[in-house]
Amino acid sequence: MEADRIIVLDFGSQYTHLLARRIRELGVYSQIMSPTVSSAELAKSKGIILSGGPKSVYDKDAVAYNPQIFSLGVPILGLCYGEQLIGHTLGGKVELGKVKEYGSAKFQATKTELFAAVLPNSTVWMSHGDKVLVLPEGFSKIGSTKDCEFAAIADERRKIYGLQFHPEVAHSQEGMKILSNFVFRICGCKPNWTMKGYLEKKITEVQKNAGNKNVFLLLSGGVDSTVCLALIAKALGAQRVHALHVDTGFMRKGESKLVVEELEKLGCGKIHLVEAQDKFLQKLDWVTDPEEKRNIIGKLFVDIAIEELNNISFEPGTWLIGQGTIYPDTIETGGNENSNKIKTHHNRAPIIMEMIEKGMVIEPLKDLYKDEVRELGKLLGLPEKLVNRHPFPGPGLAIRILCSGTKDVNLEAEKEIMKIAKKEGYAATILPIKAVGVQGDNRTYRNALLLEGKFDYEALERVSTKITNSFNSINRVVALVFPKKINSIELKAAFLTKSRIQKLQEADFAATQILAKTKQYDSIWQFPVVLLPIDFNKNGEGVVLRPVESKEAMTAKFSKINKSALKKMATRILKIGGIGAVMLDITHKPPATIEWE
Image 1 (cartoon, rainbow, N blue to C red):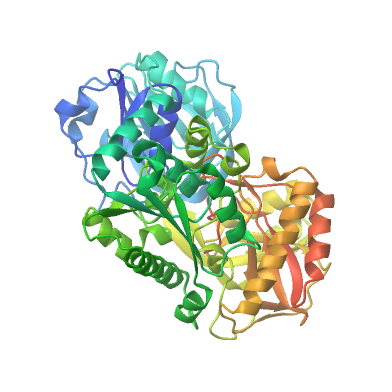
Image 2 (cartoon, helix red, strand yellow):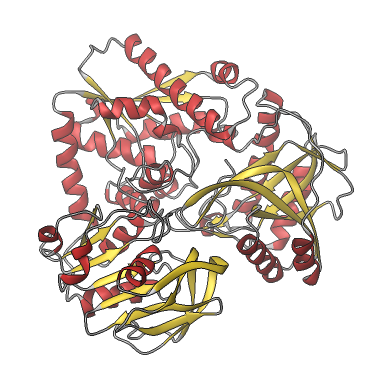
């Protein structure tokens, strides 16, 4: 099954596991390894892929790697940082580019083995600041974009290729064809890997890792924890699985009741429900920092789990804590040797990491992405209404309710930003609130920008992309839906309170209902609704709608949802007390993360 193998060397990209998974989609076994892996191990592979990464190849603290990579005679494909490593190591020149590229770009390809049957003009996904400026000897240009002359390079005699873009992300139009050409035409692999085989392997692993211990599963009720519950129950038997669902008070409207009712029908074990709204609110009182929120929530989840374990008389050493952790949770928390932390997921809080080190946690989905989890759920026989639900973060609405500890002065947009927006017919205002982003594999925490003007999706996308690519101070752009004009913006001191939670629950419920009624629910990957501690026109706080399209959550495009439905959502949300404006997030990932915190 693993005879034909592609090795992915991890230089810290947020997309490393996505890349490995794309190879598995082609039916070829892939394995992620450290860049310092031995030459003997690399020589066993049919091909080597060099991932992207957050560092610069010319820095003193550049990632260490095995320099023999390029002399083994094994075909190589370098992506982003990987292309730069090829250029820098083999005698070319790499420098910081005058223009950084994040998001979509138009790519022109020449005829080569790597681009066989690939469209000569296509859209690719960029996320870089550095670029190759001078090619090494023996290399030629095989593709370019407007802002990157050497977007694709090759030494076809040695079968060494470099791409400045990311073919592994869904938004690179011809990406899978390019990877397929490398894996099959250049490396000569044969397809022999399946999800069914992966499931069988995981069942065996769960049985081995659990031994005689029972599993106490932390159950949010989302897709990941539901599939995790079904998998562990299949491996160990329902009687050995005890699932805990904690109502933190940050669930969507009616969420906890729905979770318990639906999962009890599956017969995968007993579901324990704990009402803990007051405990979470008390711990998070006056907390505004998003990382602190996540860490507090993660620790309290575990504290409550241990308390419940004691209540149901589990003997020490006879249980494991189970989690539906998937790979984006790990990689965004900086879970790889060379990766940059984007945000701490609640299931990667420090106390959880301590328990993992002690062998107290079982996570059978930790190497999978959301669409793979859904595929696994279907193989396990779960109903589509559970498998196809929109993802919902463990901390829930706590990270969709932005908080502020102080009032602040309004910020004025830089003249160049205003000029770009005005050219397309928009007024630009920097909002006095920051959001988490990911740019060039690094975490950013920067201001959001508000655009007012005509609601033209194509123009809004152009402006959003150009501004986030050109200005480090902005990593997210929103467009005003209602009212038509903003006369005043004022940051308010605001925290996690029951009234703000209820306000967002109603806004989220309204948006979801209209999305379902207009039959757009299944075409949207995820739909966060966010509450901002900003008073608009002295009428109340702002609500941001964040519908996105994605496959694996590592990249995403904002969804251009039906304008009529968008208008209905805004109209209904504005009827909720204390809401003064409704906006649409028009930023891709990168440079913005899907969630604001």
